[in-house]
Image (cartoon, rainbow, N blue to C red; front, side):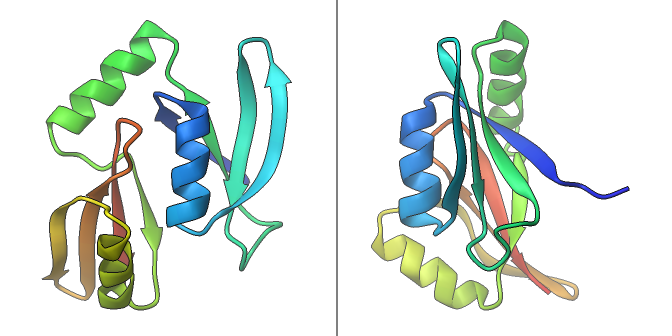
Length: 127
């Protein structure tokens, strides 16, 4: 068994696509219309055939409630690994990304947390 698809709720799929591709550097993999929303995924350009991240619309009231609650509790919706967290932090800050947690060493891992502008906090980490 392998993880092939995971998702993050977003309040605006088009805005999310711009952020996740233009700022984070992912590439669009799928963009399939399904009614008012899309089955919209992005992937790492370093592993385009591995895990896809679904930018899931939060149109369901339960999704909105969940997304809002974990954001207010300052819980990241997901996490991405990076090779050089300080470099990524500085690059993203220059692009206007707002961090709630600057790079912080926690044992063998260094983490940072930022706002994805689509209703989520996202964690990046370096082992």
